Amino acid sequence: MTRAMEQWLRVDNTAFCPGCGHGILLGSLLRAIDELGLEQKQLLFVSGIGCAAWIPSPNIKADTLHTLHGRAVAYATGAKLANPRLTTIVVSGDGDLTSIGGNHLIHAARRNLDLTILCANNQIYGMTGGQTAPTTPLGVKTATDPRGNPYRPFDLCALVKAAGAPFAARWPVTRPKKLVESIKRAIQTPGLGFVEALSPCPTQLGRRNRFDDVAALYDHLNRSCVSREQVGQLSQKELLNHFVIGEFGEDE
Amino acid sequence: MSDTSRKILMGNHAAAEGALAAGCTFYAGYPITPSSDIMEFLADQLPRRGGAFIQMEDEIASISAMIGASWAGAKAMTATSGPGLSLMMEGLGYAAFTETPCVIIDVQRAGPATGQATRVGAGDILQVRFGSHGDYCPIALCPWSVQEMYDLTIRAFNLAERFRVPSFLLAEEAVGHLRESVSLHQNFERVERNRDITRPPFGTPEVDGVPPMPAFGDGANLMVTGSTHDEWGYRKVDHPREHARLVERINRKILDHQDEIGQVERRYLEDAEVAILAYGFTGRSAFAAVRTLRAQGVKVGLLRLITLWPFPENAVAELGRSVRAVIIPEMNRGQVSAWARQFLRCPVHCLNQTNGEVIEPNAIADKVREAMS
Image 1 (cartoon, rainbow over the protein chains, first blue to last red):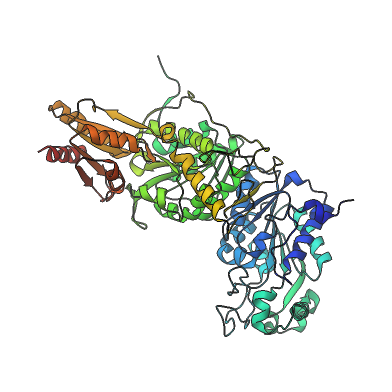
Image 2: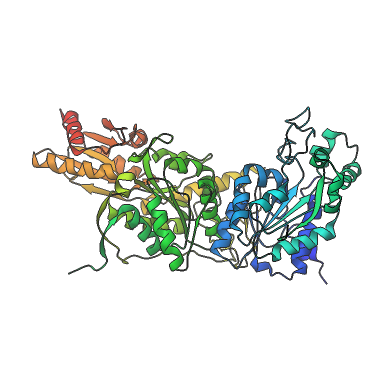
């Protein structure tokens, strides 16, 4: 029996840094498509620019479209409309999808086309050297905010839900089984399914913010995650640096 | 004999008819004067014919969606004008580097910036050629009539498919909104894509070759990327030889085929002492000036550039060898004359007009007389 990872991988090396969470997201995505029994020929993976854009390209053995910075969702929209039989999955980073590509993201949610969008959120620009992203938590130090980020981050799931997406989910890569389940649900959602995977970046975020090792960063991520039931126990200010995890479906 | 395909149409609608005749099945765009007639026509027609139409959130998204659709197997297009074209520059470079066939209709208005949205200009000539960063070479065709809005749109699609390159119909507001008789004939061949999945989609043994292009869903496991890539699509971002080879081929596949792509029209040049070099709507005024002057016994001719990029340098050089002087009237500050001068070994007289209006025949005739005196 061939395992999911081996069957779907095109290359046998990784470009990701030690401790990067993107490999777990790649594995979760491959398990999700494998468990859904999707045909290789039917699958199209579209990505933008940045570390997360390398999750599908060149790793996944299927059609991959590695586009320009921020534009993955717009390219995917054209491909899906031209051939609606393609199961079209966008995989890209938080800076790519929500800063330079933010307009495309909210319009895709508004149109509610049958696309899946996976956002690997590492809260920083990794590939370009650790600059602030629209998802960088308040006070976190970056290459462009050496005294700490003074601005609030986006709540990405709330953003796409407000723009019209019927399904959104958020999980840290430390909960891969939940991630696999939500990715499957996003793919199966007839309209736009959005999954935000919280994926630590030890190289750029960890080392600037006094996380002595990779494990400390992962522990911090886990402590920052709260379930929807726990939200009431936190003040608005405390909530800014926490992540509400779970699925946000049609009924919310 | 009556021609049942003949109609009175606006240039923009003739271009849209040409797109449908050429087999266009996808349009993505954003409203902008003076090109929106094309978009509105296709919004109505494409869904009726099994194609797809989408109004995107901006022109960056429009060109992106068009490229995505082309890789999904569609003959895809967009249309815009100056400000939208500026936004499309990043996508243009991506299309050129990934060798994506697509057609962009630019109905030029008076720029720069918002300029005069409803008035005419020809200020985008160099932008379509050089506007995106890096070295690439798109194709640009320039119509002077409603008939050519139809014919050259078809040709733009065929050349885009033949060479896997973004092709422009570089029109002007004056011809986009001109209404005249046009034959919507079907008397042409459609170029279809070679979707062979067994050969590499990004490389050829020849330095100027055009590889086959499978579509998403064909089972080719395509790797399309705007980063430097090898013949199968693997990123090669620090390999000097791979970069040089790819940049060289995407340029040479166009520049080495200028004879096939280049198209010019010659009028009254056999015995001409001076010549007018013109393109687009200005070609009409130039031709009117030639006929007036010929009636007065002035030996003047016209070389009309139908292909603007790749530049028909042999035809222009030959013109320079056969006449005493060349007059170049343009609705810009000399975008073609600046380029043409390197091929012309004779005096060049420019007539540049940037007031949002077409150049009138009398102004060109005066310039010819001045050049001959």
